[in-house]
Amino acid sequence: MARTIQQLFDLTGKTALVTGGSRGLGLQMAQALGEAGAKLVISSRKASDLDEAVAQLKSQGIDAFAIAADCSNPEHIAHLATNAMAHLGHIDILVNNAGATWGAPAEDYPLEAWDKVMNLNIRGYFLLCQQVGKLSMIPRKGGRIVNIASISGLGGNPPDLQMVAYNTSKGAVVNFTRTMAAEWGKHGIRVNAICPGFFPSKMTKGVLEKFGEDNMAAHAPLLRLGDDEDLKGLCLLLSSDAGKHITGQAIAVDGGVTCIVAG
Image (cartoon, rainbow, N blue to C red; front, top):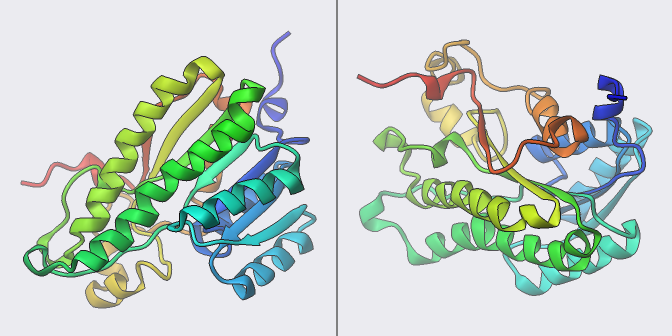
Protein backbone atom coordinates (compact mmCIF):
# COMPACT_ATOMS: atom_id res chain seq x y z
CA MET A 1 0.00 0.00 0.00
CA ALA A 2 1.31 3.46 -0.88
CA ARG A 3 2.40 5.56 2.07
CA THR A 4 0.64 8.74 3.09
CA ILE A 5 2.22 12.10 2.37
CA GLN A 6 2.94 12.49 6.08
CA GLN A 7 4.81 9.16 6.06
CA LEU A 8 6.81 10.08 2.95
CA PHE A 9 8.08 13.32 4.51
CA ASP A 10 8.67 11.84 7.97
CA LEU A 11 12.36 11.68 9.02
CA THR A 12 11.81 10.03 12.38
CA GLY A 13 14.79 7.77 13.09
CA LYS A 14 16.93 9.42 10.39
CA THR A 15 20.19 11.29 10.97
CA ALA A 16 21.58 14.38 9.27
CA LEU A 17 24.83 16.33 9.09
CA VAL A 18 24.47 19.98 8.03
CA THR A 19 27.56 22.10 7.40
CA GLY A 20 27.34 25.86 7.76
CA GLY A 21 24.43 25.02 10.03
CA SER A 22 24.84 27.66 12.72
CA ARG A 23 22.95 30.45 10.97
CA GLY A 24 21.19 31.62 7.83
CA LEU A 25 20.29 29.09 5.16
CA GLY A 26 22.08 26.24 6.93
CA LEU A 27 20.18 26.73 10.16
CA GLN A 28 16.91 27.05 8.22
CA MET A 29 17.52 23.67 6.57
CA ALA A 30 18.65 22.07 9.82
CA GLN A 31 15.38 23.22 11.38
CA ALA A 32 13.39 21.67 8.54
CA LEU A 33 15.11 18.30 8.95
CA GLY A 34 14.82 18.42 12.73
CA GLU A 35 11.16 19.41 12.62
CA ALA A 36 10.54 16.36 10.41
CA GLY A 37 12.13 14.12 13.06
CA ALA A 38 15.81 13.82 12.10
CA LYS A 39 18.59 13.73 14.69
CA LEU A 40 21.12 16.43 13.76
CA VAL A 41 24.78 17.29 13.82
CA ILE A 42 25.45 20.85 12.68
CA SER A 43 28.86 22.28 11.93
CA SER A 44 30.55 25.62 11.33
CA ARG A 45 33.87 27.21 12.20
CA LYS A 46 32.78 29.15 15.31
CA ALA A 47 31.84 27.23 18.45
CA SER A 48 29.97 30.23 19.90
CA ASP A 49 27.66 30.42 16.87
CA LEU A 50 27.07 26.68 17.09
CA ASP A 51 26.18 26.88 20.78
CA GLU A 52 23.50 29.48 20.03
CA ALA A 53 22.11 27.43 17.14
CA VAL A 54 21.98 24.21 19.15
CA ALA A 55 20.20 26.00 21.99
CA GLN A 56 17.65 27.35 19.50
CA LEU A 57 17.09 23.93 17.93
CA LYS A 58 16.75 22.20 21.28
CA SER A 59 14.21 24.82 22.39
CA GLN A 60 12.12 23.61 19.44
CA GLY A 61 12.37 20.01 20.59
CA ILE A 62 14.99 19.06 18.01
CA ASP A 63 17.80 16.62 18.88
CA ALA A 64 20.91 18.58 17.86
CA PHE A 65 24.66 18.38 18.48
CA ALA A 66 27.46 20.65 17.26
CA ILE A 67 30.97 19.99 15.95
CA ALA A 68 33.22 22.93 15.09
CA ALA A 69 35.17 22.44 11.86
CA ASP A 70 36.65 24.38 8.96
CA CYS A 71 35.37 22.63 5.85
CA SER A 72 38.19 24.01 3.73
CA ASN A 73 40.67 21.95 5.79
CA PRO A 74 40.95 18.23 4.92
CA GLU A 75 41.96 17.29 8.48
CA HIS A 76 38.96 19.14 9.92
CA ILE A 77 36.69 17.40 7.41
CA ALA A 78 37.97 13.97 8.42
CA HIS A 79 37.48 14.91 12.10
CA LEU A 80 33.96 16.16 11.39
CA ALA A 81 32.91 13.00 9.56
CA THR A 82 34.40 10.67 12.17
CA ASN A 83 32.89 12.52 15.11
CA ALA A 84 29.50 12.92 13.44
CA MET A 85 29.49 9.16 12.89
CA ALA A 86 30.42 8.61 16.54
CA HIS A 87 27.52 10.78 17.69
CA LEU A 88 24.88 9.70 15.16
CA GLY A 89 25.91 6.08 14.53
CA HIS A 90 25.41 6.57 10.80
CA ILE A 91 24.58 9.45 8.45
CA ASP A 92 21.44 9.27 6.33
CA ILE A 93 21.46 12.87 5.08
CA LEU A 94 24.34 15.20 4.29
CA VAL A 95 23.70 18.87 3.54
CA ASN A 96 26.81 20.58 2.17
CA ASN A 97 26.15 24.25 2.84
CA ALA A 98 29.36 25.83 4.19
CA GLY A 99 30.53 28.49 1.76
CA ALA A 100 32.45 31.71 1.20
CA THR A 101 32.61 34.52 -1.32
CA TRP A 102 35.04 37.32 -2.16
CA GLY A 103 34.40 40.28 -4.44
CA ALA A 104 37.08 41.64 -6.77
CA PRO A 105 37.46 42.39 -10.51
CA ALA A 106 38.45 39.26 -12.45
CA GLU A 107 41.60 40.91 -13.82
CA ASP A 108 42.85 41.68 -10.31
CA TYR A 109 41.37 38.74 -8.42
CA PRO A 110 43.86 37.57 -5.75
CA LEU A 111 45.00 33.96 -6.00
CA GLU A 112 44.64 33.67 -2.23
CA ALA A 113 40.97 34.65 -2.50
CA TRP A 114 40.38 32.27 -5.41
CA ASP A 115 41.85 29.37 -3.43
CA LYS A 116 39.88 30.27 -0.29
CA VAL A 117 36.58 30.22 -2.17
CA MET A 118 37.35 27.08 -4.18
CA ASN A 119 38.70 25.13 -1.22
CA LEU A 120 35.55 25.65 0.81
CA ASN A 121 32.84 25.83 -1.85
CA ILE A 122 33.75 22.80 -3.96
CA ARG A 123 36.81 20.93 -2.65
CA GLY A 124 35.25 20.79 0.82
CA TYR A 125 32.00 19.39 -0.62
CA PHE A 126 33.91 16.68 -2.47
CA LEU A 127 36.01 15.69 0.53
CA LEU A 128 33.07 15.50 2.93
CA CYS A 129 31.00 13.50 0.43
CA GLN A 130 33.94 11.15 0.07
CA GLN A 131 34.28 10.71 3.84
CA VAL A 132 30.56 10.27 4.52
CA GLY A 133 30.16 8.01 1.51
CA LYS A 134 32.89 5.62 2.59
CA LEU A 135 32.08 5.68 6.31
CA SER A 136 28.31 5.35 6.09
CA MET A 137 26.30 5.75 2.89
CA ILE A 138 28.04 3.25 0.58
CA PRO A 139 28.26 0.45 3.19
CA ARG A 140 24.60 1.03 4.15
CA LYS A 141 23.49 1.20 0.50
CA GLY A 142 21.62 4.45 0.86
CA GLY A 143 21.81 8.15 1.56
CA ARG A 144 20.68 11.61 0.52
CA ILE A 145 23.14 14.39 -0.27
CA VAL A 146 21.97 17.97 -0.77
CA ASN A 147 24.62 20.34 -2.10
CA ILE A 148 23.93 24.06 -1.85
CA ALA A 149 24.87 25.71 -5.12
CA SER A 150 23.43 29.05 -6.27
CA ILE A 151 21.69 30.64 -9.22
CA SER A 152 25.13 32.24 -9.66
CA GLY A 153 26.30 28.77 -10.71
CA LEU A 154 23.70 28.64 -13.49
CA GLY A 155 24.91 31.73 -15.35
CA GLY A 156 26.84 34.95 -15.12
CA ASN A 157 26.03 37.96 -12.95
CA PRO A 158 25.88 41.66 -13.75
CA PRO A 159 29.51 42.82 -13.91
CA ASP A 160 29.21 45.06 -10.86
CA LEU A 161 28.86 41.99 -8.61
CA GLN A 162 32.45 40.84 -9.37
CA MET A 163 31.96 37.24 -8.19
CA VAL A 164 34.17 35.24 -10.56
CA ALA A 165 35.40 32.68 -8.01
CA TYR A 166 32.05 32.24 -6.27
CA ASN A 167 30.19 31.78 -9.57
CA THR A 168 32.79 29.35 -10.83
CA SER A 169 32.69 27.33 -7.63
CA LYS A 170 28.89 27.12 -7.68
CA GLY A 171 28.88 26.08 -11.33
CA ALA A 172 31.27 23.34 -10.29
CA VAL A 173 28.89 22.29 -7.51
CA VAL A 174 26.10 21.83 -10.06
CA ASN A 175 28.13 19.49 -12.26
CA PHE A 176 29.71 17.78 -9.24
CA THR A 177 26.16 17.00 -8.10
CA ARG A 178 25.22 15.51 -11.47
CA THR A 179 28.40 13.45 -11.62
CA MET A 180 28.04 12.10 -8.09
CA ALA A 181 24.38 11.25 -8.67
CA ALA A 182 25.30 9.24 -11.75
CA GLU A 183 28.17 7.43 -10.05
CA TRP A 184 26.59 6.73 -6.67
CA GLY A 185 23.06 5.88 -7.79
CA LYS A 186 24.07 2.20 -7.78
CA HIS A 187 24.65 2.56 -4.02
CA GLY A 188 21.14 3.91 -3.44
CA ILE A 189 22.51 7.40 -2.83
CA ARG A 190 20.61 10.38 -4.19
CA VAL A 191 22.54 13.61 -4.84
CA ASN A 192 20.82 16.89 -5.64
CA ALA A 193 21.61 20.60 -5.55
CA ILE A 194 19.58 23.57 -4.37
CA CYS A 195 20.35 26.83 -6.15
CA PRO A 196 19.14 29.73 -3.97
CA GLY A 197 18.67 33.20 -5.35
CA PHE A 198 19.17 36.22 -3.12
CA PHE A 199 18.35 35.65 0.54
CA PRO A 200 19.30 38.16 3.24
CA SER A 201 22.32 36.64 4.99
CA LYS A 202 25.78 37.51 6.24
CA MET A 203 27.21 36.50 2.85
CA THR A 204 24.83 38.70 0.84
CA LYS A 205 24.77 41.63 3.25
CA GLY A 206 27.32 43.68 1.32
CA VAL A 207 25.60 43.20 -2.05
CA LEU A 208 22.17 43.99 -0.64
CA GLU A 209 23.47 47.14 1.05
CA LYS A 210 25.19 48.25 -2.15
CA PHE A 211 22.31 47.64 -4.55
CA GLY A 212 19.34 47.77 -2.16
CA GLU A 213 16.98 44.97 -1.16
CA ASP A 214 14.06 46.48 -3.07
CA ASN A 215 16.15 46.78 -6.23
CA MET A 216 17.34 43.18 -6.00
CA ALA A 217 13.81 41.96 -5.31
CA ALA A 218 12.56 43.86 -8.37
CA HIS A 219 14.55 41.49 -10.61
CA ALA A 220 12.40 38.53 -9.52
CA PRO A 221 8.95 37.89 -11.02
CA LEU A 222 7.65 37.34 -7.48
CA LEU A 223 9.12 40.74 -6.49
CA ARG A 224 10.67 39.42 -3.28
CA LEU A 225 13.85 38.01 -1.80
CA GLY A 226 14.01 34.61 -0.13
CA ASP A 227 13.11 34.39 3.54
CA ASP A 228 13.71 32.09 6.50
CA GLU A 229 11.14 29.54 5.28
CA ASP A 230 11.84 29.28 1.57
CA LEU A 231 14.41 26.46 1.56
CA LYS A 232 12.64 24.28 4.12
CA GLY A 233 10.22 22.52 1.78
CA LEU A 234 12.71 21.67 -0.95
CA CYS A 235 15.40 20.54 1.48
CA LEU A 236 12.90 18.21 3.15
CA LEU A 237 11.66 16.90 -0.20
CA LEU A 238 15.19 16.04 -1.35
CA SER A 239 16.09 14.51 2.02
CA SER A 240 13.00 12.34 2.49
CA ASP A 241 11.30 9.46 0.72
CA ALA A 242 8.94 12.01 -0.82
CA GLY A 243 11.81 12.70 -3.24
CA LYS A 244 13.07 9.14 -3.61
CA HIS A 245 12.99 9.28 -7.43
CA ILE A 246 14.78 12.64 -7.71
CA THR A 247 18.54 12.68 -8.22
CA GLY A 248 21.11 14.67 -10.17
CA GLN A 249 18.96 17.81 -10.22
CA ALA A 250 19.86 21.45 -9.59
CA ILE A 251 16.71 23.28 -8.52
CA ALA A 252 16.51 27.07 -8.29
CA VAL A 253 14.72 28.73 -5.37
CA ASP A 254 14.91 32.31 -6.59
CA GLY A 255 11.48 33.88 -6.97
CA GLY A 256 11.69 33.24 -10.70
CA VAL A 257 14.88 35.17 -11.49
CA THR A 258 16.30 32.40 -13.68
CA CYS A 259 13.14 32.06 -15.80
CA ILE A 260 13.79 35.46 -17.36
CA VAL A 261 15.96 35.84 -20.46
CA ALA A 262 17.76 39.18 -20.31
CA GLY A 263 17.34 41.21 -23.46
